[in-house]
Length: 482
Ligand code: IMP
Image (cartoon, rainbow, N blue to C red; front, side, top):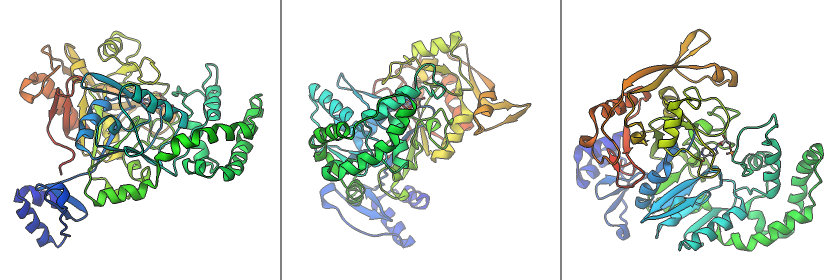
């Protein structure tokens, strides 16, 4: 990839690029007349002399990095928007032409005309939440149809029993509390790997559903007995699913094959991650994590494409750090004036649950780690304007742990809790960055802050967001153009 894009850059024209690729022996010419001049080069598409990329967007902290605005901007340029993990625990707020849309399960493409939205197999789907979200959008004038939304047949379902089980585990006095969104996400993923989940396609074969429900309830009723709860009758689950099936089945598709075909047609695909890399079930602050893989590689597994379908990984990253729920957060300033100021200025309240987020300084150690676990090519740095007016700004550059300094977050829960941040202090800036649309409009000290972050995390800033408005963005690199 690097070789081709370097040659493309050097040659600077479609013919130059073509010749360069021929010289490399990697050109597979094919012209797509429908979409203008297009050539396929080593499995990727060349449009008007530019190699087109499929882009994965991931949160590079603990979620809530301001993905909504960036994903919306990217989805305008994409043909297809794919969700590949999580469920309706995510919360994306999109503001388009003055109207605010709150999405939890549906991909951001649904609010834009002419885009195909896809929910991949890596997502857990609450069919009732799906119906409700579609109905809510209809009230706002957005009609979601099987032409605009396709859902993977092999995606597991979230059922009411999952939410009930999670509510027990999340009760205030429960030792099992994680601080989840209480949407049933974790229990549904447990059933997926426990090989007893009801999946989307099972709704299409109601006679066979009985046996699957029995298998599921053998597990859940045992748990319920342990908790002193009444058992669930198989017929109750069956009736719920049979009633819902005709409403959701029209959206079902063989998503891996659909996406493969679209990719071959040269469509631009945006993979829309939810939550953040530090909530990843493997790489996050376990056990205070969500139950899916949130890292970029999951875009392939969770949609049924191979890893070579991903060309560019964009990490969304807040200019400071926030976290909701329990768990370690080394740079947390929740109990002091800094944390309060960041929370108030940044309007740090959860979209899904309304919970106040914990706020703290930027943690370069964590983002550097995420850049590596996600293979991030460029960062979209958001909410820089929230730091306007601070006399000084701190950035965590290492941790002190048990008398020594480390440059990564250890995997163990107790070690994570003991890690103390080692800060570097940078002078703040008094002039506003809010609404800046070019580097020239930024105070010198703000530019210094951004450059230092790039240096510390080992990754360039591709996009800088300076307000919730779409236009208030400084673009250094379009992720769709290699
Ligand atoms: P769950 O995903 O509901 O199981 O919650 C597990 C953890 O992930 C909790 O700490 C939640 O607060 C967190 N979480 C889940 N979804 C989001 C999100 O969209 N943004 C931020 N945190 C989230």
